[in-house]
Amino acid sequence: MTLTLGQIADWIHAEGDFDEDAKVVGYSIDSRTIGAGELFFAVRGERVDGHDYVGAALANGAAAAVVSMRWLRPETVDEKRLLRVPESESDCVLHSMQELAHRVRRAWGGRVIGVTGSAGKTTTKECVAAVLGARFNVLKTEGNYNNHFGVPLTLLRLQPEHEVAVLEMGMNHAGEIRALARIAEPEWGVVSNVAPVHLEFFPEGIEGIARAKYELVESLPADGLAILNADDERVAAFARGMGERAISYGTNERARVRGVVIEELGLAGTQCVVKAGGEACGLRLQLPGQHNVLNALAGIACGVTSGMELAACCAALEAMRPTSKRGDVVEWRGARVINDTYNSNPRALESMVEALKKTPATRRIVVAGEMLELGPQAEALHRSCGEAMTGIDAVVGVRGLARHLVEGALSKGVKAEFVETPEAAGEWLRENVREGDVVLLKASRGVRLERALEALGGE
Ligand code: ADP
Image 1: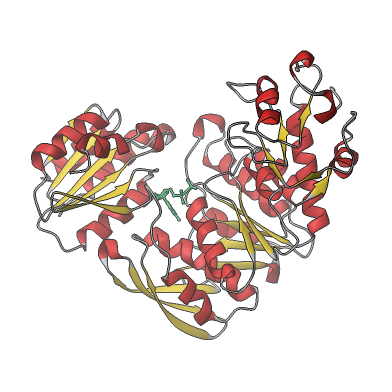
Image 2: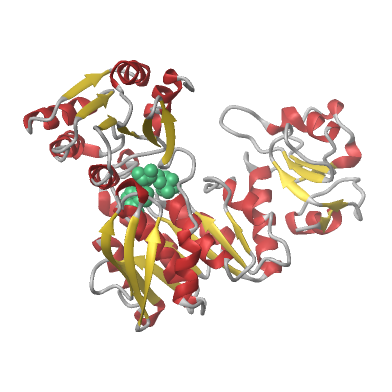
């Protein structure tokens, strides 16, 4: 939102000799990409301190910089382009950015939809934005800008003409979603699922994770709506006491917005019928795997609740394609490689393997990297994913716990091999993949399994 420096300073209690009437046309924390007329926030990240880049940001055309004099070396910059914020906290510049985002959100006054969950946040957010985008002017989180930096930066992109903002909200610790909700004040909250990720920060286990996701529902206003995955028992339980304000989606009979799978089309997607409000509509989803059916249903639930026709919601989703590293297909020497290396979890891996089994191919190969942050069940979960590989022609387990996945596959008579690194997996593929094969690459982000693909080169 375009604001004057005077207005901004008033909202964040900043001082300085700046030109009160100067207009700010955008907001940034990166001096390298900052645009002319934007406001630079000198936030202190884990590795770098924005105060070291104030001079660079101003040289690159920033209108001004928000700083704490405690951290700034004053000789380096033009005093007349500084907004000095009170020095009460070590991350006071970040706090100011969050406060400004909150003020902008209030001044804008439209509907914010928060999206959270252990897995599928980005895809769910994309589905919600795709559906609502067919009817409304939607602002959405870019990429996974879903934390205490990304959420305020997204809100600061709000323009008066936006009608809805769809914001992804991530967390690693209890209290983080509540803090993001305080900034963004969502009226609607979408929760995709509760799964054992980031368990190391939740000594009470998965129930602690559920509690942390519930913070989004708790933060909704009295007339706010919770859009909840009815296929996930912990998420479904969030509806308790909400009555009509809870909108459930899923594949089971209780769901208000229900998807019935008619045919799995392998990696090409799923053919479903969606039922909502007494109507039914066909949906040919081109996103692979059954987990994406749920992500799509979340979008439809938001659409019909916004007054859209069911058919219009389905049409918007049919146009969606997998995004980078989330199931996009790369051709290599006449084989198709499914790059699903962005992340993994047992449920999504099994769902993608089922999709692979239904995909026409000479041979089907799974390269499965280890799945991180699964807590005490990790070994058993890897093993059972391996046991579910029957019907796959070859399995390569990559790194650490994937060893147990390989053992599980071998125990079912599936050809399987373990390698230590993504590069070694790339070598394996180079030697073994033939024309007509379909290869699924899937692993937790930390494994960086895309390096296997890079090792193949672009032949
Ligand atoms: P997030 O933003 O939560 O990391 P993404 O939408 O980026 O989630 O998806 C990351 C990976 O999570 C996907 O490649 C897929 O394997 C898995 N995933 C996506 N949607 C779901 C879902 N609804 N349930 C379980 N896993 C999912």
